[in-house]
Length: 78
Image 1 (cartoon, helix red, strand yellow):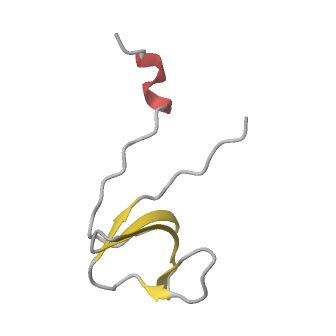
Image 2 (cartoon, one colour):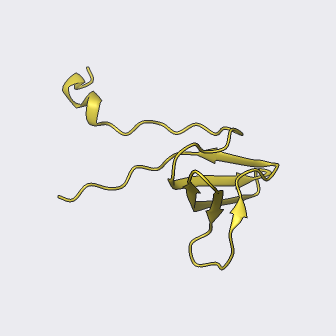
Image 3 (cartoon, helix red, strand yellow):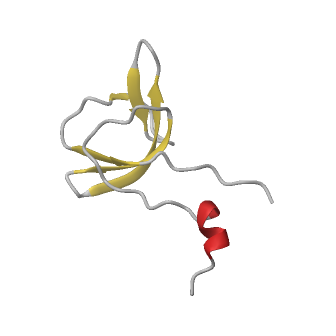
Protein backbone atom coordinates (compact mmCIF):
# COMPACT_ATOMS: atom_id res chain seq x y z
CA UNK A 1 0.00 0.00 0.00
CA UNK A 2 1.46 3.44 -0.90
CA UNK A 3 2.37 5.86 1.85
CA UNK A 4 -0.35 8.50 1.35
CA UNK A 5 1.34 10.86 3.80
CA UNK A 6 4.11 11.38 1.23
CA UNK A 7 1.78 12.20 -1.67
CA UNK A 8 1.87 16.01 -1.24
CA UNK A 9 5.67 16.06 -1.43
CA UNK A 10 6.05 13.64 -4.33
CA UNK A 11 7.20 15.34 -7.54
CA UNK A 12 4.52 15.81 -10.15
CA UNK A 13 4.88 14.26 -13.58
CA UNK A 14 5.58 16.72 -16.34
CA UNK A 15 3.60 16.46 -19.55
CA UNK A 16 4.72 17.64 -22.98
CA UNK A 17 2.65 20.45 -24.47
CA UNK A 18 2.83 22.74 -27.47
CA UNK A 19 1.45 25.62 -25.43
CA UNK A 20 4.17 28.13 -24.68
CA UNK A 21 5.15 28.64 -21.03
CA UNK A 22 3.31 31.30 -19.05
CA UNK A 23 5.84 31.75 -16.24
CA UNK A 24 9.60 32.14 -16.00
CA UNK A 25 11.75 29.19 -14.98
CA UNK A 26 13.62 26.13 -16.22
CA UNK A 27 11.77 23.91 -18.70
CA UNK A 28 12.44 20.84 -20.72
CA UNK A 29 12.20 21.72 -24.39
CA UNK A 30 11.99 19.46 -27.41
CA UNK A 31 12.10 20.51 -31.04
CA UNK A 32 10.45 18.06 -33.41
CA UNK A 33 11.17 15.18 -30.98
CA UNK A 34 14.88 15.32 -31.83
CA UNK A 35 16.58 17.96 -29.74
CA UNK A 36 15.91 17.58 -26.02
CA UNK A 37 17.40 20.09 -23.59
CA UNK A 38 16.71 22.19 -20.52
CA UNK A 39 16.24 25.90 -21.20
CA UNK A 40 15.54 28.98 -19.11
CA UNK A 41 12.32 30.76 -20.06
CA UNK A 42 11.75 34.45 -19.41
CA UNK A 43 8.16 35.63 -19.33
CA UNK A 44 7.97 39.35 -18.66
CA UNK A 45 5.35 41.95 -19.46
CA UNK A 46 7.27 43.25 -22.47
CA UNK A 47 9.08 40.15 -23.78
CA UNK A 48 8.96 36.35 -23.87
CA UNK A 49 12.01 34.34 -24.86
CA UNK A 50 14.19 31.41 -23.85
CA UNK A 51 17.91 30.82 -23.51
CA UNK A 52 19.90 27.60 -23.65
CA UNK A 53 22.38 27.53 -20.74
CA UNK A 54 25.95 27.68 -22.03
CA UNK A 55 24.97 29.05 -25.45
CA UNK A 56 24.76 32.63 -26.66
CA UNK A 57 21.50 33.95 -27.99
CA UNK A 58 17.84 34.29 -27.15
CA UNK A 59 14.93 32.77 -29.00
CA UNK A 60 11.27 33.79 -28.97
CA UNK A 61 8.76 31.49 -27.28
CA UNK A 62 6.54 31.74 -30.33
CA UNK A 63 8.73 29.48 -32.51
CA UNK A 64 6.84 26.65 -34.20
CA UNK A 65 7.54 23.01 -33.47
CA UNK A 66 8.72 23.36 -29.86
CA UNK A 67 7.21 21.24 -27.10
CA UNK A 68 7.54 22.25 -23.46
CA UNK A 69 7.43 20.48 -20.10
CA UNK A 70 7.71 22.41 -16.87
CA UNK A 71 8.48 24.50 -15.06
CA UNK A 72 11.02 22.25 -13.39
CA UNK A 73 10.92 22.79 -9.60
CA UNK A 74 14.16 23.88 -7.95
CA UNK A 75 15.69 21.42 -5.49
CA UNK A 76 15.24 22.11 -1.81
CA UNK A 77 18.21 22.48 0.53
CA UNK A 78 18.66 19.60 3.01
